[in-house]
Every structure is written in structure tokens, then in C-alpha cells.
Image (cartoon, rainbow, N blue to C red; front, side, top):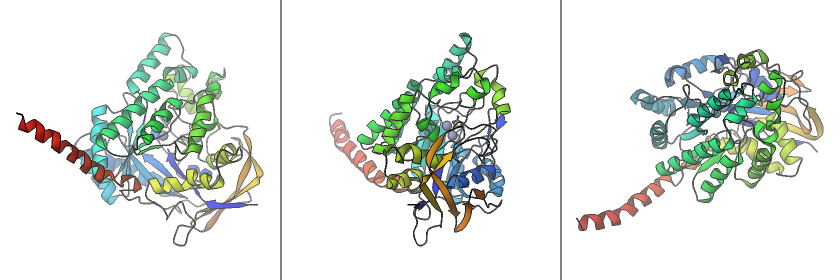
Length: 439
Ligand SMILES: NC(=O)NCCC(=O)O
Ligand SMILES: [Zn+2]
Ligand SMILES: [Zn+2]
């Protein structure tokens, strides 16, 4: 039997991204072509402004994305804070179709922001009905961890994983959750890589807080053994932040995904080729951070989660597409097969097998972190906006055919936020009245 499903939506990618002295090897055409070959029909990329200005950052990404062959949307990163940024956030939401802002709690000296900015940003997101997203790692501690490794003479890729252990991810996740709770605004934690972070999300959700957790496919299916490979290029290709963890973390993240503790799967597709990774040959701190996944996600989630019986086919569609569309307020245009929805459809053959290799993938990267993976369940057809773009292992894609998808504020995550605020304010009335009466 063949399965027909709505096309995948990848909530987390970095195409044509200038980062750590390099630029990701996939642009909006090659990355999207790879995505379509793997059954993903929309992605949401991060605009990361070079000088902190949101308007010029968006302008740059509008240029980069002109060659798109697949539908896409944007999140916006906030890397500094002032009145201009605050006003630009309003423009992004009210005029530019952006409804989510990412705050980096790591990458000290580059993208990292402090708690004061995080609070200002959360407050602004809430007022605009925009979703706050965090890269949750304690950046100060990771910086110290890196220094510790260098002092110990550990300069290879294994130093990357050793310098930023799960506790740093757990701490930052807990802090972001508590601050978002304090502001009473929904929070989205990107690339959840550890049990430590996942357990913080689980606790918060159990208490009723609106927190979304996004594992990425590398974190779900890979383990940290690769960064110990004596060959630098092999080890360096697995360097990403937060790091890929020991196998028990991936297994726990899979279980959390199957139980609904984590809600959707992204990729953090941010590929650099071997020569780019070699920038850090003498110092792991200079290895551009990022791995591939945009082409592999739909196959690997099927193979790992559905084939193993951990999730149903319905849940597969939810975690790879529908939930993303709901969170970013584009459902049912995206994430559904219905009259009036965009005709983004895949046909997956559960009896067909796939094999992953840099020799045959469609990304421009000369390596693949899932090299050699063989599994069951192959996307045989991808239909994007009613057009067959992947059939018989052949792509039919054209630059400029992809559309920008505007995303409106106040998704379902904001339901009840106003009521909770009103309840909080009224709970203050009686004690304040009592206090005033006694003074
Ligand atoms: N994750 C990673 O290593 N690279 C992409 C940038 C980010 O998402 O932190
Ligand atoms: Zn990140
Ligand atoms: Zn990312």
C-alpha cells in the first residue's frame, strides 16, 4: 500500500547563511531542491541580520531567496536591543509576514544575547502575538568550557562536545522557560538535543505552560561517537550546537516525541563542506557549526519512528508537517490535504527502501552525516503546489517558482494568554488592598 500525505514542513533551516567566517554550502535553490527530493515542500529559514538591523537583514534574505523552487517562510533572529529593533519587530509582524523571533542564548561574542534582552524580546513578542524561540545553551558556560578544553590541549572536534555538556542546555532551557512563564508568553525551544532540556520542557508543559519542543533529526538518530573519529573531516562534519549527544539522549527524545512531550521535528539544516569545516583543523572553536538533514528528515523519521512502531502514520504527518503549520499559523493552507489548501502532497512507499550517501544526495555538501544509512519507506513522488517535482528519482524544479508564505501573528498558542493575565492582575488586587489598608 502507498501512503499519500501532506508535504513535509521543516521548521528550522539555514540556507545561504553567513556564519562563523563561512557561508552554508546550500543556497535557496540547492537546499530546496534537496528538500523536495526528500518529501519536504516548505521550510522556514532564519533571517539572521548581519548588523542587527531587521529591515536590512530581511532585505538580504529576500534577495537570497529569489532563486527559490519551493515555498518558504522566515523566522527573524534578534541579536541586539534598542528602540529601532523594537519598532522593526512591529514592521516584521504587521507588514512582512513574520510571526516568530529567535533569541540565541549561546555563541558568546557573536549572536548571544543576555537575560535583559531576552525579557525585553519576550515582552515585545507577546504584545505582537509573535512566538519567541530560543537556542537554549548557557553561552557563558560554553565559552568557559571551550577555554577549559584548550587549556587541556584538546583542540579536535571532540573538544566541541566536551565543552558544552547537556547540563548547559538544561540550564538555559529551564531559564528561558521560567522567563517566558514570568512574562506569560508562549515559548518554542529549537533543536532540543538532550534529556536535560527535554525534561524541563516536559515539566513546564505538565504545569500548563505553553512550551513547544523541537528535536532535530540529527539529534534523534545520531550519537556522539562520531566526533571521536581520528579523521578530522569525519569528526568535524558532526559538529553542531548544541552537540549531538550520547545515544541515550536520542532514544529519550524519540520517546518524548512519541508521547507528545516534543511536538514536531526540524533539521537545523546548516551544511558546510569539508574545506569549510577545515577552518577549525587546529582549533575546534573555529569549525563552522552545522549539519545537513533537509533531504533526509522525512525518510529518517519514517524509518526510525514509524517502522519501529513508536508512532502511527497519523502522528508521522503531525510531527513532520501539520503541527508546524498550526504553530506558525499557516494551517490549513499548509499541513493539510483539503479543498483550498496548497496542493503539497507526497506519496511514500513503505515497502521501498532508501540509502543515504553524499554521492547521491541533492545538497551541495560533499559529506552527509547520515552516510550509509539504509532504511524503509521512500518518498516516490513529491507534488508542490499541484506540480509534480519529484518522480522516478528525478527532480523537475525551476529557480523562482517557490513562493514566500506570510505567517500571521496570534496562533492558537496565544489562546487564553489574555485571560491568564487578567486572572493574575485580579489576584494582586486583594493583597494590595490589604497592604494599603494597614499602611
Ligand atoms: N546548530 C548549529 O550548529 N548551527 C546552526 C545555527 C544554530 O541554529 O544554532
Ligand atoms: Zn541554534
Ligand atoms: Zn539553527
